[in-house]
Image (tube, rainbow, N blue to C red; front, side):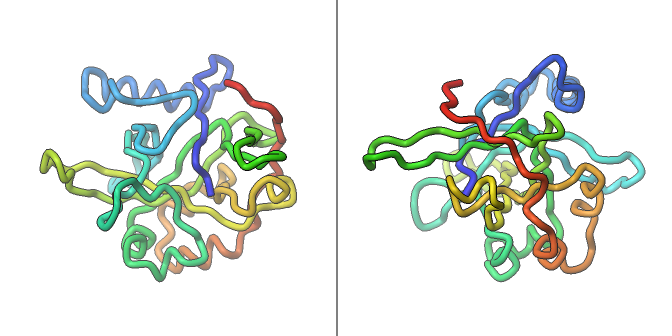
Length: 212
């Protein structure tokens, strides 16, 4: 599971700064632009994602989407999709086939239970060789039950945890190497097979006692 992640708007992080600058230019003065979150991202926040436009020659484009598919039978949102079952679940099947996205991040958070059920230690996982992480995701358009308007939301795909994450949690986001973003966004065959053939990605660093 990935219940929170971070996108730190650091001056020395060229790739994230590039994405944030593109978002600022495209969404200046819009409600989405005003609501965009950086820093620690929570479910239902509006956050940057990367999409492949119809005009493929234009390259990958940044957009603002809401984190979490709505639950039709209960309150709350669905924030993750298991890569092993996304292709068989109705809520994710169409998104997996035609609406894939990439979620840029500085890292993701997990919590380890302490000596008591109430005590949990927060960990931030970041990649060891780069300051940006690309997580595989899905997106879909939904109708707002309150306003009747439409909005677009995303979920993060998860896979079995690697050796660094597994002592804390048994799941982690699917992490894509930068050179495979176009393959994920434009893959026209069995996307599940593409992801299941992948390892969980570069081993992240482990930061204990995060209090940001």
